[in-house]
Length: 328
Image (cartoon, rainbow, N blue to C red; front, side):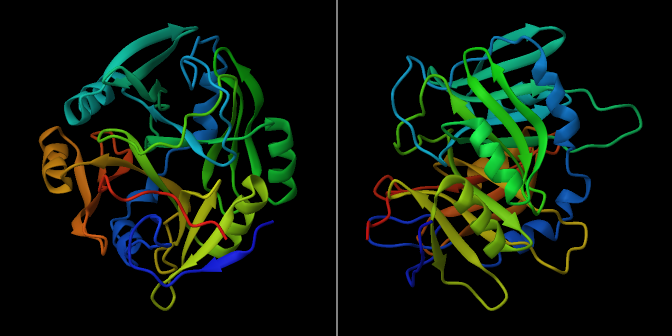
């Protein structure tokens, strides 16, 4: 395991070459005070639909040889209204789609300027139930069965057993010890390179959890992360997860005074103007959950939801700011 490092730099989701930085301390608290996760989508019930013989897209096309343990290599939406979701994200980010259907399962591969950026899967909600759609985070591993063994030994639950997906590789769905859901993926086409995401692509992910120390320790054991402890206010923790000298994600405190709030992963899309994009979210039928605000690094960040309720973040990111961390 790698040691924990302390940092005393400025406030930002991820570090640059000059040192580790941190997210704004109260952002997640304000987000959860909206009661957003009172009806968190039941991913365990959603995932069996993936067993259909879909010919899903490869993670990297053409296939490559890069492998980055712990990198979030894909983000996928599970939603009860695929057509509405496609319309919303096309209008917001300019995504285009390739539709895939097999065995009664509907799936759309999303592209931005010809580059694959996401997947969107339709999953019906049983009559009389209300479940919130969710964006799932896929973490790169070399061996899903080995990842399962480590995850279970350290308190995780298996929501969907390891299985092979044509073109994609082997994957499995887990809930970490605090209940946050994630996917482990051994991509058969390699992992995407570590390059800065373009506007309209996913750029950051945060784990919001009831026990940041335990959460960081779990993912460190699973993905061999370096863990950096970031400056924060009393009662709030901010930890940075890194591998290959590259920032992968952050771990943040779940407010204890929100009884219905549940640990979860929140993914952010890079945008050029968070204020304009937040207004566009509303125009397209979505909601702004956390109004755009300035981070200490100078960019703005907001948290929004699509018309079906799936939450995600909007994050401005200067071209000059790298996600690399200094090697020690």
